[in-house]
Length: 487
Image (cartoon, rainbow, N blue to C red; front, side, top):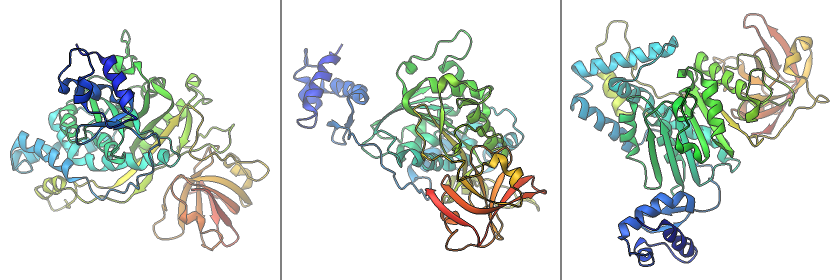
């Protein structure tokens, strides 16, 4: 048994002197353990010591500065991950995995999953389903996590040493995206919770991660891991708090997502973040918003003991308000290139007269997301003032009036080439609200140029009721001024 205290003490002494060489430390530890044993001990202690292992095998301190925005804009799923997935497919079915019976089986599973998601049926993940899921979803889920993390890194809220819990890790899309989003000098203690056969795919994909991305896969349910199940104690992995908890496209599949998310908040460090994202379709996106609202302190039926607050994107600009609209909001990022495995499966499909190519191609990056924190920090520290703004909750009394509004931009342009249309909110709305730009000017151009989640101040917007859509339209025209308050 190696003297871990001696290893740690020597590492702490050398860290500010020179790179830490396991062979050198071995000489100062009682019994002169083999350098390989010292190296493995340093790897196990690296997170607590804030050390990272270099390519040459030496260990050096992790920079104290937080993670900078990475300029995340992937154009494709990296080849290494594509090769890893195809390696699994070839092992399972042979080189022609996409053809004949095996290809038909995979295509049938993809079709079944798409139908189950559409009708909110329970989804079962056996080995074939996990491979089909990876083929269809891995690229987009890989890209999504980085765009969401941008909200944290722009404010310096992601450390270079991270303890991460990935609940419902699936086939590894969020894990791989997190790995590539972080700088090379980050050190991550990554814990995946996944009870299904998807772990067979996940394990293979995690083999592609670097030496400072240390992974543990817990083949159990989220409820058991977090100690929600009756008679279950939380996993010992929760003894230390997590800096980042990820729910990537999984909350809609849980029997009691609010209870699981509440337990995950309990496992979060005081300055940590819970990040959840879901597909952009109406069911999962509005479901995510309902869960968010149930968790935030002050909401009816919520868990005020957690003191969770919304960091982004659906900010509440009126501190005493609670939104009750459906909350269908999602972000859109550029499409990815079609990966080879999707193209192969799609091109080998038998086509009927009504079938079109592309059924098994999925490279759209569209997602709803929520980031919750317990320290009160918000992406944008802005609040509305009754002296300057009208509440969206009171739009009924302002129909046909021109008003000032402070709003969060919660969509890209939803129009089909006519007047630009943007979903917006201020955290008080009970009904859907849209800004409709009928005439762009230099004074209202900020509405178009503002990004998703930006806060804008609209001066002199005309409030109208849209009977067909059951929503309020605020007309932005040549009498309206729009200022970007926070990007």
